[in-house]
Length: 186
Image 1 (cartoon, one colour):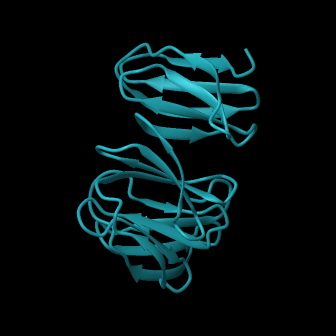
Image 2 (cartoon, rainbow, N blue to C red):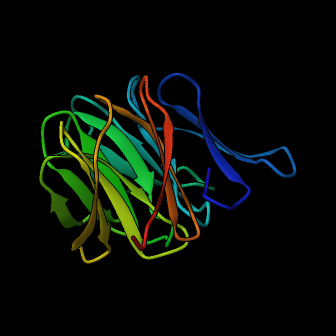
């Protein structure tokens, strides 16, 4: 779903995607994509106008008009897609892969904006201009949007399950561990 909007992208296992207004329970569109099974390979932007689909092998990442299903852009060079997440500001697409640096793409044209070495996921705060970067086997790094780290949070287990931001706070749920809440300013 868009972060605070009413629009959801729903996949029927592979390829077929439907766009729904979840407040009115109305299907807005249905179209074919190149999304395939596995990972978190479907995302929709903040305004609910662009749907993003990823594939593991040949097709890479594509953006589709959420109303018509028309392909807007495609990056076939980005293979082994595992995670897609649209930014909260409607300008970027966060992309995680099996065996390459985490990438941030421009939502409008798919051009690479930034690579984050060793990262497997990025979680964005809706309250401050900060993100939490999850890196393979390392502590969590809280950074501003210019990618400057200002806070390091220690891992307590081998894997993070979820991150949730509140005003000035960040909660982390780790596999077989507790949910921990941190003050982002300290």
